[in-house]
Image (tube, one colour):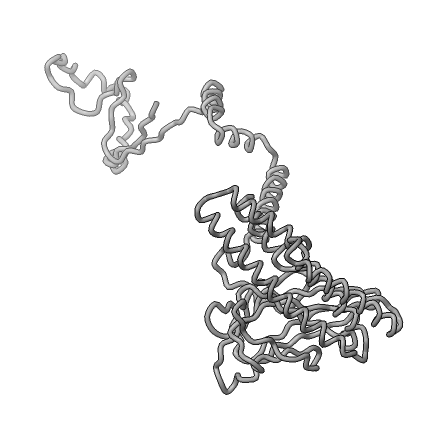
Length: 382
């Protein structure tokens, strides 16, 4: 319903009609009786308005709308309509909560979202996201797969040198061994030093450069126990040159050595050399004999590293290790090619058989090929 209100401005401007004081005493007789009124004659002057039909006044009109409040039935219909959808149910739930509870729910939701975002960022690596990430500068037991140096397929460019820090933690006397791979390196090009003391040159490329794994014993006398240590790869040709070089897959291995007198250490090394020679003679008989020969010679090498004065046996052991390592690397590369061929032809049986052969020939994680087989099996779900 609407109510119309307004006021005629012309009536506001008209002065009020004068008051009639009436007839004086005796004037009634002197005046003649008024003639009868004609029904058809229009009466001049204002007429009384009809109470039943008030006049509609002209001029500006203001419309005032009266909105009826929603009834309980309308509110019930609205709630039923919201309850049909999940979003509507949430709206009803939110409206029933107090202001304090709304603040609490909002804070809890924000905290959950923050934890979820941090979890996703921690799981997804920068490489997967296409981001540059942070350059590794520390070494540990886990391999650093990024590559360093200058040239093709180098992740982090370092024309001159690249340094790595690590902490040597061992409660007893131990020897640390650096495992790494290198390529595009010529003779006497890249020098390796520990805490400022040169350890020698990185071996130059060979026919098995892509498969070989290099090892460098870090002398116990140069290691700072429970302190920070630094390894430095320094390219002697850069600058002024711009020679390409590359290192990758770096990791440390800590091997405890027996705290024995020098003569007993030498005797233990000689026993390991004899065992290695026997395994090497039987390398064609058993699949794992070549690996066992390498492991025995390596044990002799680590034992001799504990001696301050190296005997002549030390150089013989190093040569035998280099020879057997080359054969193992060649064997590992051949098996990996067979595995790739089996994957290419989608022969799951041949792929599994090849990986089993790798595990027989490299039974422990001491050699890189064993870990490589595990990675391939995980990658192809074998």
